[in-house]
Length: 403
Image 1 (tube, rainbow, N blue to C red):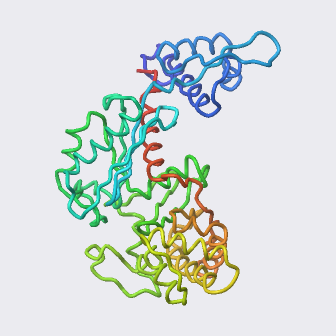
Image 2: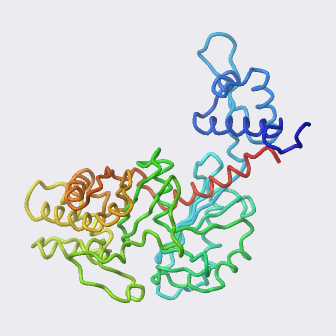
Image 3: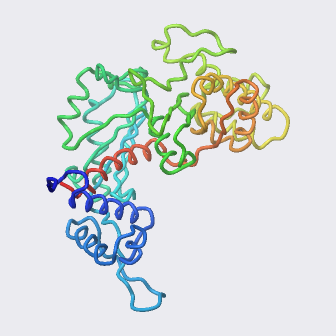
């Protein structure tokens, strides 16, 4: 007896599977001819033609030109229609909200930054979020209703059991128990919330140094020290969303910090966080510590350390590497990851020099021997991860032609 429409193995489902394969190939390779799509998918020319006609009628692909320089008549080239859907991402810190909109191909089409200085927000968080999103939407020449999905990245994590933000007491205005309901009422699209370091890991997994790796740890050091854990290809968030909050980790070499949530700090943060680098530099006799925010100062000092083969700056880099490896040793001993990605300005500024020192120290402190690499996604990695996260779900929904 023939299966009903939508049952696995039926023509509708098989067509949808072929459609998705073709769309993914177009995203990966760019414009392709009907013949090339047929070869890559294994479909006959007539079936490939029907597929492309179906996708073009659905507004998912469009003809972008013709092939040239090949024997025979020029062939039409097909590409994913960028305007088939749009997704947005927000990167939230205490100082600002950075927003961006991307089309379905992943190209950023609008960006906006909203300053949010001060311990008490001048405007309610819902207003800040909508203003930042609307700024990016306007820059893209779109309307808010054009955005299919929004992903918001914040420090800490929203506890899935209570809906309240945890591990981020320094983010003013974001701790109301009704905040998620208020945002859902104010925004016309589905909204997801993710830890900022988890989003950096997603960006590295899809676009950067962790591409093709199913088990890795990303260590982030910028405004705060944190980690993202990817196990079996999936982010591990923990029961309350706090997996990877390694700044609170007690470590040798740092005082035992108690009531860590009130202090918003812990042993590993005090030992190896960005704010510890300027202090370490002064302890080593470095006189010309530059002024400015500690995140920028830390990156500058680490970069100088990587540029010196000896002297106090080199000693700064060595000591910093030991401190980083001290906390990493606990992580890799428990998780035994394939790869560790170093990200955030206080780590990437040290480049290969810092990476090699941390690798050598880690091999002496831990039995597990993961490979360390420096992250590749340098420009707004949290925002890039938010967009990638939003695009994954958007594509799954928009590219599903079985409905």
